[in-house]
Image (cartoon, rainbow, N blue to C red):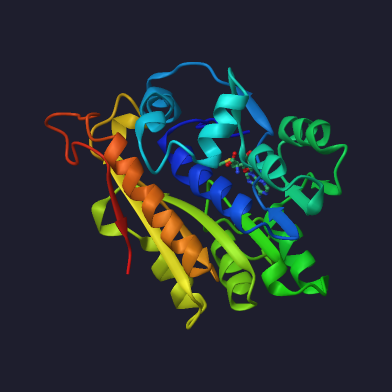
Length: 273
Ligand SMILES: C[S@@+](CC[C@H](N)C(=O)[O-])C[C@H]1O[C@@H](n2cnc3c(N)ncnc32)[C@H](O)[C@@H]1O
């Protein structure tokens, strides 16, 4: 269950995810921390800075008006699609799926959503489950895309298991396509996940698109900074360019959403070299 669904952090995950899956569909799509298939799109202050601001401004933006994410939102009024639903919409029956979540409610919603597809729902630690699949599977690495979207990037679920970050590094080093989502709260941490994955998997081709914004966009009572980003491993140049264009467009449509006196006062997007 993703309590932060539809907030800015979700927009800067689901917008690039939907675009990548539509334009470069993997044969196998796996998620370590899947959440629920979808959520009722209720209004909250945080969602007003996220998906609701996106719905308001994206239709007039040249780089967002034809985005796969906007189309998905328009096709499902009143519903916020989680990453699993965005994925199954984009890929349909041409891909196989593994969705992991330890939350029974999320797992139940996923089972209901994917019953017509070649999909496995694993109601257990997603890091260990996907690490096991990675070891056993005899798949061409470039045929697999894994979304790693943890609340706790350094959590070791059992003493012998990997952390989400370690898993990301081993999959990336094995040639798998990955999307790793991360968050942070101080400017010094900007782009931290890119450095962490690069340190564990030297030489792997990584791309990192990072956003900072007022923390009140996610936690309305607080002041200061919230940052989040995505690290792509083994992405094509076209995917990297698409994500750059989408990140810049998100910054553009958020330009009038300003918190005077806060540092930062608005959204900025940056590619972490
Ligand atoms: C950020 S939410 C996922 C959001 C989803 N990927 C999306 O984009 O719509 C994180 C999810 O991870 C689940 N979770 C937490 N620890 C987990 C673990 N060790 N293995 C699998 N799922 C876990 C939570 O129940 C929650 O549903």
